[in-house]
Image 1: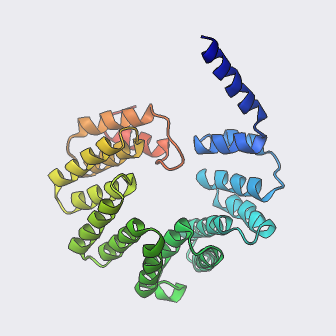
Image 2: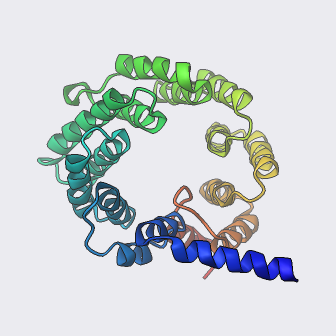
Image 3: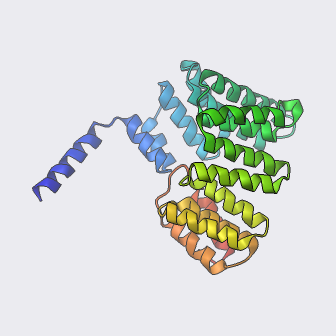
Length: 281
């Protein structure tokens, strides 16, 4: 009992010693964006400005996100992570703006991603974001498959599993489905517990009509990551799109809604939308 009380006392002291920024980061990680923003107040440091921008980004307020993260990159121009996040904000503004503004925002996204990689050639997130840009953007906006391949080759040096995954996305984009599946399986072989790769393979198999194989991969993902809510969400999403096992989809979504999620998981608003499709509340 004394040991337990002592541990609780120490934990309380540690939490008390955390500053507003650390507590805000913790709330952000738990998807409590409003709570994180309240703690940040009127930020002045680059880190706090960037975190506030991320909160706005997660809430879909991309213009404000851009403004705050732009300020962070001004204060810390050599920070690769901030520059990558700036690219994401411009990218979302390109996706959600009108046809006249979108090209300009897209170009700013590309420039930020390229700058982020220049600042830190080993920044996996920035390399992945740049790959996605080159893969999806038309040539007149700086996209292109050859550029995407070059980024995948850079990724292969520092993260072979992610490089296989990106090559799978390229193959899928080119409608080379067998090659896409092979690359995804290579990614899983290198990093068998990477839940995102397992989910992507399960989705690919489902899209090809390989329902049993898809379900088997989802089961594999759940066994490897029993406490990964994103697996439940993804499996339910696939089942609903294919209009099968809707009761199971409902159970998975209800489980998701009651779980503690992180910023890496789909928003609960998306799960709620899917749940309504299967008669949930």
